[in-house]
Image (tube, rainbow, N blue to C red; front, side, top):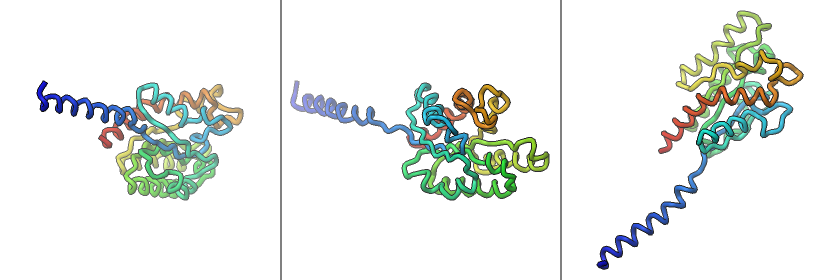
Length: 215
C-alpha cells in the first residue's frame, strides 16, 4: 500500500470513528405539555399523566422524545398565559397546548379565552416553537349560545395559525364512567391511556414535521 493510499485509509477510519458517537448521542426532541389538570394528571402519579403516557406511545413507535409535564390543576388560559414564558424553557422543540376546560367550567367569556390562547400561541411562535393544539368543548349545561361561541375557538385558531388540532381532549373518555375518577370529570389512568392512544396519530405526524424542520 502506498503512503497516499494508507493515509486515505486512515482518514476514512478516523472520520467514521468520530462520526459514530455523534450519531449515537443525538438528543431527543424536548417537548412540553402545557395545560391544566387534564395534562397534569389530577390525583394520579406522574407516570400515569398524559405527557408520560403519550411519551411512551411515541417512543414505542420509534420517536426519540421527552415530554415534560407543565400541567397545573385548576389553570385557566389566563394562568397559562401568565406562566408560558417560564413553563416553556429554552431548548424546547415543541409544545402540546391544552387549556380552556376551566374557562368553560367557570363561564369565562369565550372571547377572553380565545384572546388568551392567541397570545400564548403568538409568544410561542415568536420563539419558533411548533404547537400541537388540543381542543376542549363546553359543557352542555353552559347553554347553546355559550357552547357555539366556545367550541368555535380551537378550529378558528388552528386555521388562523396553521396548527395541527386534536379537536376534543376528552373524546371517548368523558362519556365512559369506567374511565373517570370518582368526581366524574377527570380521567383515571386508563382514561389517560386512551387519550394518549387517540392523540398518537396526530402527535406522530407533528413530531415528524419537527424533525423535518431540524434536519
